[in-house]
Image: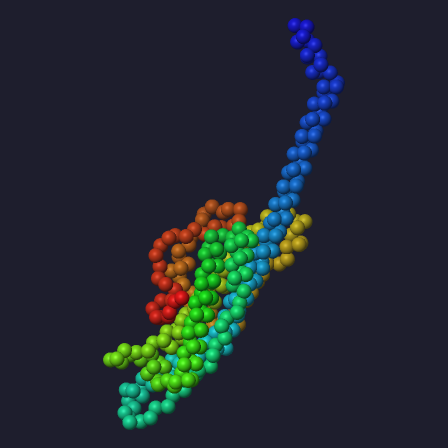
Length: 290
């Protein structure tokens, strides 16, 4: 009993109380310091995440703008001229004199391949930020559409060089079928250019919009003291090129493959792939694929 009393006296002594208070104070101080450090790190990571998302959105919209310019200046007029010439030639075949010499204009100007930083965009979305599921899928679609567009452009440029060297007749140029078959190479390359231009415009624009939404959700988690460092979210208006924007309806099947989760995660609304089968975005154009 005396030993127990001695232990109790020691435990209740001023020295013991002082030591216990110091230990608790040190623990609380260390825990608080660690909490502040972790919170500061999370804030810094969120600021870095916001900036990277903003850069990615800017690049995505830059791709949209570049392909819109390509379509407006080169591909749309080229395709329109080609279709008008084909219609005229078909009318000649139906109503013209068989012995009449038909002169046609084959526009053999080369189209420069696209040179846009899609690879850099893909790296940021896949490696530098925690992007929503649909943004990741869109990034891969944009990357593939870029490859396919350049392949179609390369195929057409090779054919124009062949035609300049060897000449070309209207039936071959317009891809008309005969009993002996038909040369559809130029027709398919031109259709591929049109389809992949539209796909790249639509999907890069959609990706940019998704990244803007994601960037805003990241910015909302920043403390007020850091929001000043988070410059304004990228914003682009393509209304001046509205006539060059493809009809969204042709991409509806792809968009319906994703649904928004009712549960909002820390990184905004997640997209879930529905896993349903859908038609190729190229439709029935007959365009070649890589």
